Image (cartoon, rainbow, N blue to C red; front, top):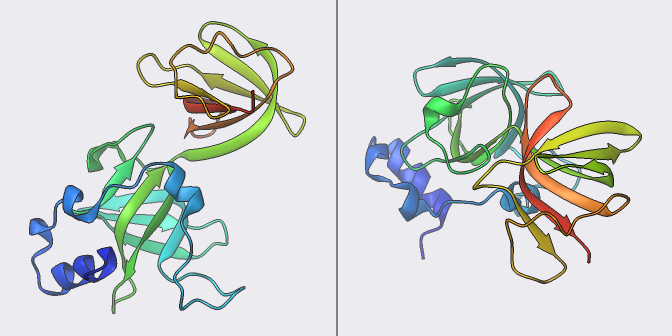
Length: 199
């Protein structure tokens, strides 16, 4: 059986990247950015060559020039088969200089990372609700205030094992929650994709 990576690599090396659709590759949801296991061949403690993170410095054609938090420079190629997320599935034109990202894919012989998935500005934060209104949650995250904005038609809450709901009125001040969402670069604000609550 052909893996996602084998399919992407053969398409890129064969020059047929345009025939690899996102549906054929299997889009990855935002939870996968934090759940994805490193390549099995990577030794514990070694960096995963098929993963990159950082902030976009510039964009040239379909390549994102990214400076990692460890000051390593990455070139990440986005192709037709790349799944992009920015509070939901988005097109390549949603990527902007200044955006933070996580990317997973296949390292090509020239060192460029051919991306399977790119998560733009994704955050996964835990904290206690300080204040809540109809359109935002003020979260105490390690003593810092994070403003989490409710996005109509997008933001949902998941309570324990119950199905997701767009009704966030069951959340309360003092409650411990985990928020998955998209950071607004250079601010203390995020847009909410999902609020997870243990009860």
